[in-house]
Image 1: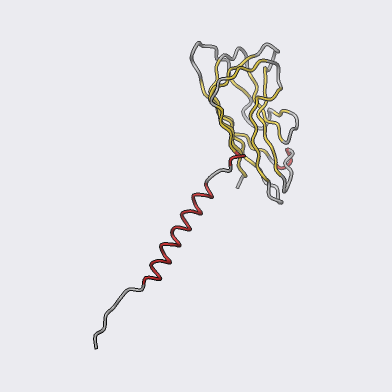
Image 2 (image 1 turned 180 degrees about the horizontal axis):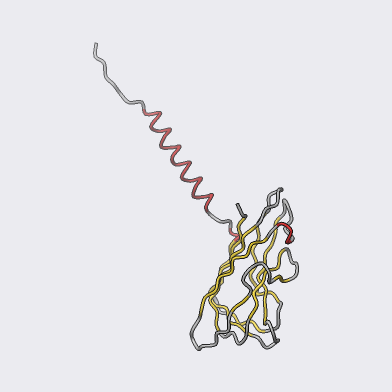
Length: 163
């Protein structure tokens, strides 16, 4: 009687499939939904006294047990002739500049841009609505006069649920 040992293919196939599912799940879990991101790559000049919308907005659906969110705004900027405030409007509320860093420094050098990143923590008491889609819009303006101006270059805005 001849006995041959042949490995079973089922456990190997199962292990390969399981590894593929785990990899796919980890990749999709790290991807941020499109509504939570915005990128603008065109220079735009804003002029005026605080506060008015600076065009960008993102949103995220809060779980039923509302939790803090993190909003990150990053921009190249130039042509700021005075301190230019940057703030956040939560769910179309007023422009709030007290969530974190509050503005762009004066920079008025021809063809020279600087970069600034704001990372704001928005708590449930700041107007987040449980179980609903919450929106976050960047706002700002001159701290002192209506003649304040700034040119924003490439910029990104994102929101994520805090953990």
